[in-house]
Length: 163
Image (tube, rainbow, N blue to C red; front, side, top):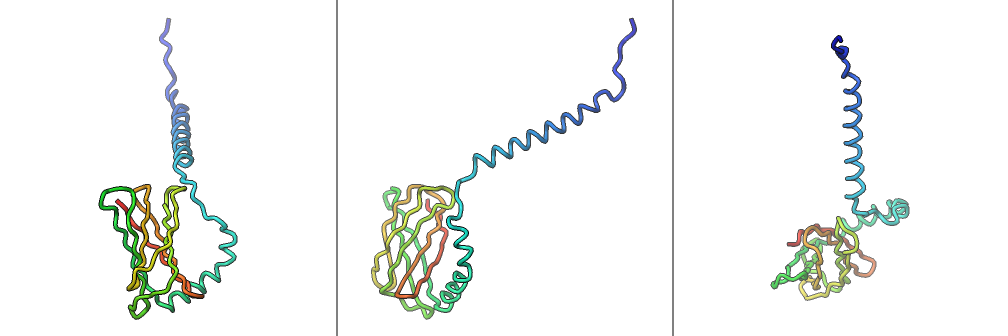
């Protein structure tokens, strides 16, 4: 009985099968990563914000001309608990302290939903506004300070890393 040999190149079709298997495996991994790592954060009212874009540009120009400045600091709890003191120092273009403002600080977690909070800051004198903030998660936070006096509105966003 003669030896049955495979013809030369019998394995060439398997190259294509293996290549397609690699493509399918990579696509499956990428699809899994896309679905499981999405934080669910999205812009709310994006259509209305887009319509008001020119108003936002005009407000930014007025804010720049006004020249108010914000210095933000966060002092964690001395006992290591999940709270700390947020302090905003507000000054005008000449460096003079600003008083008689309504100041809020919005803590926004850029990667997780459900932890955002807004605090009213209390004037302590000399342009300093403070509040006690509970920070349930350590890491990066975006803090938007909004200061209002009459028709004047100033906002400043600072990214803090809280340990």
